[in-house]
Length: 476
Ligand code: GLU
Image (tube, rainbow, N blue to C red; front, side):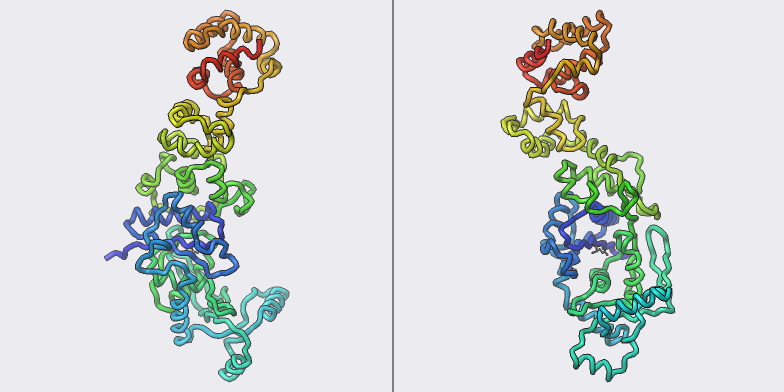
């Protein structure tokens, strides 16, 4: 019988959820859902220095915002908890005790300074920097002596350096690691706490994880973790290490790159659906690029995953996907999403009722690349634009400007009757050999302050008649 698929998203609570985290979370989610498996959230908070978001609430909130619902994890629990590593110390201790009993580990009393000196000497001698196993060879008496003297120690795993460790990866098939290239690595710290490598291994084993899907920066860790699985004769999960994301300069993405932080994207007016959709496209191609999470669950081809090196983060593409999602969003939801951005940017917009906003949005939503664009796109509705004849002249030249304004002014009186006004100015424009772009561009400019954007027809529907008349008469 096939084992039930169990995958996990295992972020550290650094307080900064980024696009790489979301990618790991999404692919784990899609994999679990497509294979009828279980998606676990585990908070990896063993490193005190990185625990900014102690309760993991930022992670939980963002997953909720993205609708990436987990089946087991913080708040909801599950059969394999606790789901915070800080609450699993007894489990790690038990595993360590087993490994001590089986002589798979040894105490290392070397101080940080000693280790650093050895490292520098090895580098100076063109040798790969590896722990030289000083403490592996300590006699029992020496060990006792050091313990009695209170010298702090850590537990190291005794790597079988003659071995070749294999992992089965979804993207590259079997990957082999020659363990002679690895040091005996630490399982604990001097304060007795457990390292990431160790706790992550124990948890994947105890939580019965079948597939580890995470960033490529963990590939070397996979070799070390796999060597722990082998040493303890535990079944090794399959792996998928996702290619790194690079910024436009080809460097590994960081906090400094706009678009990396999820909170930042949320505040900039990106939709959760768009972020997920965009993230699913990274390194993949689909016939239809715009897909909901349900569609992605159906269509994602996990069997065809391959290794692609690194992937450039394309902010333009994210904008495009977001734009498409804004278009796709049902009117009532779009109103709800857009309102906070609109109210924040244009104070007087709070008086606009939902029905009117819904109507306006139906006319202008194709101009929004982000929800935040609403302030810029709709400013004309609340504020008369600053316009000047010089701007029109700059666009269309002195002579044409004269005729354009003449025509507009001539027909202004019927501008409460849209069709008639538009027909009239169209007819006159023809007589004066003016293009539609020139005449309508100017009408749009007088109404909105911009030569491009919302169609003139729609502007007549959005703005009150009186307002249209005032604005069109502004320059004569
Ligand atoms: N806690 C690790 C991180 O945040 C993830 C490790 C893993 O997925 O195995 O990078």
